[in-house]
Length: 190
Image 1: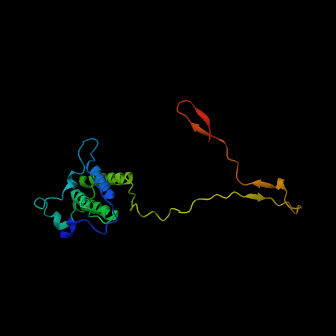
Image 2: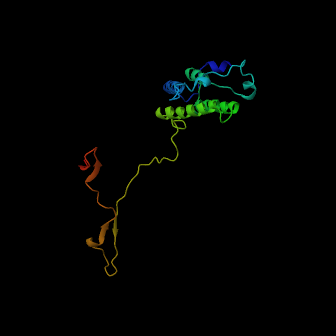
Image 3: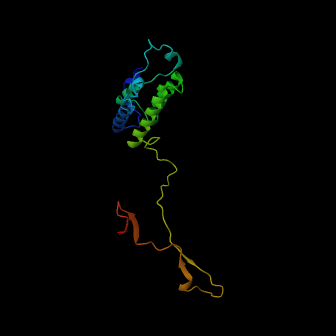
């Protein structure tokens, strides 16, 4: 459609993000089998030929390939990280549907998916959009209160200094730090 050729106006992704996504996608494309040096992405680069695999287009309602994802990145057509990830998930799901769970194509796809997650994480894209911090993280700074506990003496009406004891142990001035090959040495904290 005509809408696919122009950048998306409402995209939450920046030019920098698109450049990073292109870089991540290229890193996934480059993944090779360590033993055979075969590039695992080759079968995923382009959609199957309709002449060679006419049944593919009857079975798969939304065909997509890595080069389609790359084109969408270059054209800045993704609105969100979720959309980018969803295209990858769709591609791997299509491979499973068409080739079956145990096929070599699906096994290659799983290796590519693992590499995709690795490079996205390495480039600062956690499982979801980097703009939305996870709700579990506390935003307040951690504050530690140190209080003194009073021991009530049964026959004294007011506590004196001997009856007040600190709750926390004093912090030591030295920590043990392992050193390579020479055993342990004590190092003073600054």
